[in-house]
Length: 241
Image (cartoon, rainbow, N blue to C red; front, top):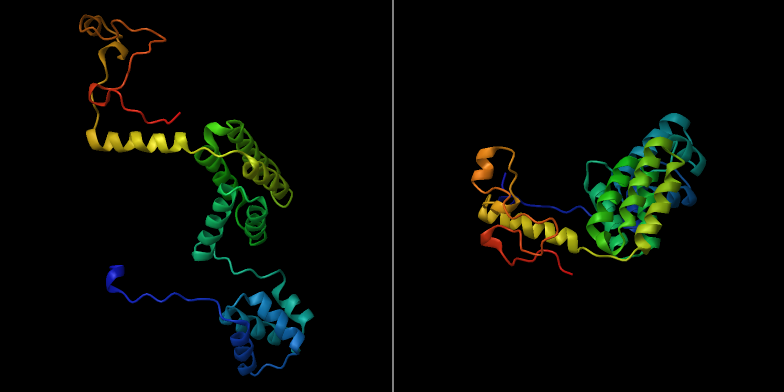
């Protein structure tokens, strides 16, 4: 359906006060300490809190911090790999690196790793970031990002998180330059606008006698200063220097 014809509801996290009321109304008996722990772990998600209470009660009877932890087995993070939180977190991660805020980037990295995100997904985003946001300012960033990706492939979790952190810190500290990224998409725009414009004759390939007779490659100079763009785009500058 068209979004414009739908009623959209944005579901926000419940406050701690609201969560406490909901937990109380479930009828389960638990201490204030256990309630506070459950609220912190549920991240404002009442459904998750109720599910944790039901599972703990079924498994252990008594609901305490320890039995809640045992029922949970591992730290709960509201992180659906196909949902909004997945995209929100990776977005925050990239934007923190772009802003050269290593502390924030490392925090979002830790959240993703702790939630079970595929480390290769994170490393791929870092490789893209190295070219998109650092580019010509520090070309070695791409080498570092590729090495991080390779380390993730070879080592795997949990140790590869150290490699990811190393790479994230490096990318955050690097100078930023998006000129090659922006130049490419300006060129893409012209390709879409004008289609396949004729390549200048002197830089065409001439593998046959007929092509030579048609002057393909004639006058070609290896290190020419002449504009080699198609005639319609002569003088166009994509890359800012």
